[in-house]
Image (cartoon, rainbow, N blue to C red; front, side):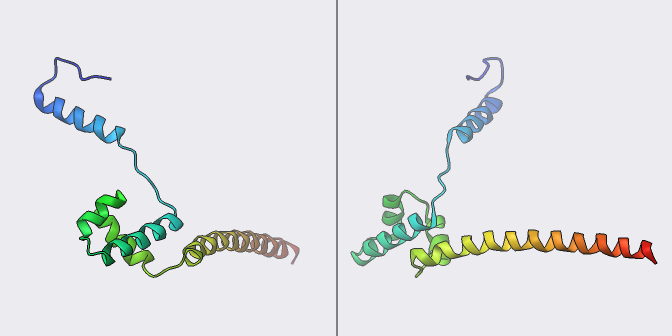
Length: 115
């Protein structure tokens, strides 16, 4: 898809920026991948590399590196999987509690009608 020739230069620049934003794909890393990348970064840091060189080698931004370091720093892969499991279990428990609460309210309404 190309930009129509009759539009002005400012609109054309915005159009190109919009197209570029659509073309860029974002990569979501799994916790295991993040921990492996952080371990690799630790090795590179131990070799005396600078953070700018490390994030370039890992293919991430420095903001992402520091966010990962804060969130996953010092974790093992098993520990990284645990919060996802707890989230899923918590969702299941919330659903069960909601169903039981609804059943209780229905029974209370039915009991009021019998008196």
